[in-house]
Length: 137
Image (cartoon, rainbow, N blue to C red; front, side):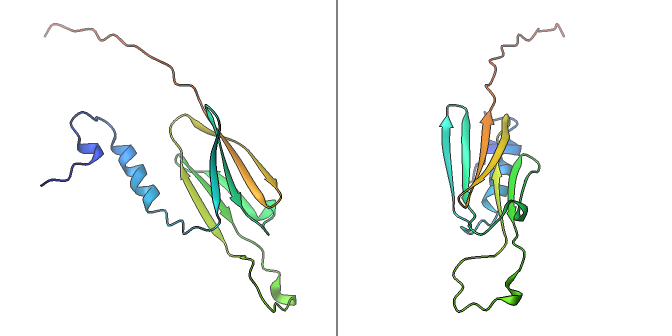
């Protein structure tokens, strides 16, 4: 029995890139830190919220790389002069990646109360009907 993939289905032409994006997303290695929410804020907008307690704006970097939203966090190590009896607040670096569909654009990023909000908007798709001329061969 042959396993049929999305890119090899006879009625799904040109979806090889989508299949590669799904594989890349599955291999991204996001272990669960930091925790996040994704909410739909309107019909064409979304908000990703990450819990980044202890991180400042200068400790975070948000980039879009090859249709992938990448959020990185790295705190400066100021624990040299401090003696911890218990250290339960995570201060490790992280990288979270989210694959963006075509037409999804990253809006503003807002930091409030230890939460990083990143707003996304999706452009309205246009309905295009194209008539193809048949040439005599």
